[in-house]
Picture: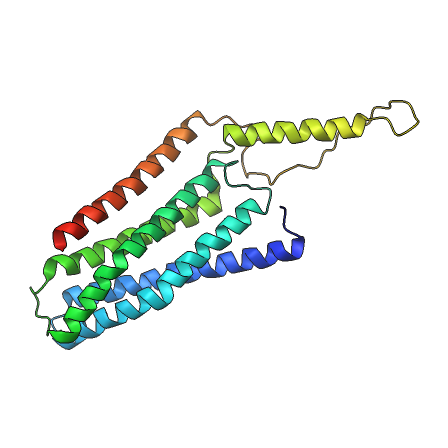
Length: 238
């Protein structure tokens, strides 16, 4: 169901706010993870991991879920759609993967915070899980920056489904403009020139992007690989 202009602006504002907040929180989270790993002071490391747990559960998780939900509202409630453009679908898959990994990652953060609360952390203590926290934070930041770049550049054009839906809408619009009024004779009018869906900068409405599908499959593969590696590393660490 299409959103009204007022609701569309509200949904866009909510999505941008949650996405930017998520990105900023990940930067702060990464700084704390690096500080906890490299600081020679045990109290600094302890404070870093306790703060990471608070930021993770109270900031990262709510903002991630809000960004995913508002992104779905934006795609399904506007002409962009969820499957009509390669970049929208790729961004959605990246977001789902990032949220999934975050939810799987947070129990490890809580465990590390519990260790830090009970045990003074010297330099080599618990080094492997501490390094994993930095790697996960850096990987999350990279995924979010990629999703942001997709929103700005909007690459690859329409999917085959998106091109088919555009053809159907144009055909329907053409039929309406050439249909005779009740009780009159058929008259031809010029087809509507206003685009039926949001334009993609630098792309035609029917731009062919045969490599777009392969890039999208690559993104899906990276997300799945990231989740699998996280599960394997989590089990090994446990």
